[in-house]
Length: 133
Image 1 (cartoon, rainbow, N blue to C red):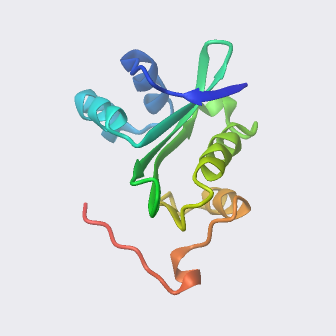
Image 2 (cartoon, rainbow, N blue to C red):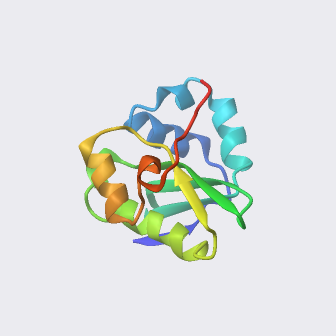
Image 3 (cartoon, one colour):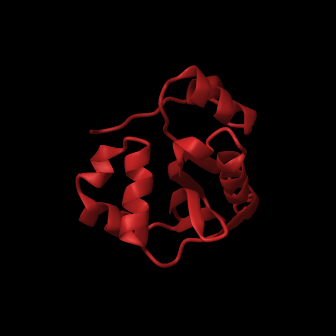
């Protein structure tokens, strides 16, 4: 597996990946997804040969805050270390940034994954988060 910057937007490839994990809020509006990816701070992709396995997409300023907007891996490739490798690549690249944040599903599986990567729930550090949807 190789992790590299995702520099050239390939709409069919990205739409397949997002659809595979059921993220229809993105796939229902492909033009918005394109703008989101193209305007992200950094998007990394995991490939085996030339087959896309997953991506991680970040937004922020890269100095005081990095927000992991999306991390997704094809279901058939999950639980094989791909998500871990993608997230670790971001943590390594932005090791000097104090705030690396993300929002995720409130499931045992996702909470366990992010805690295993060193993340804490905001409530554990005396903070709370808000979102306007």
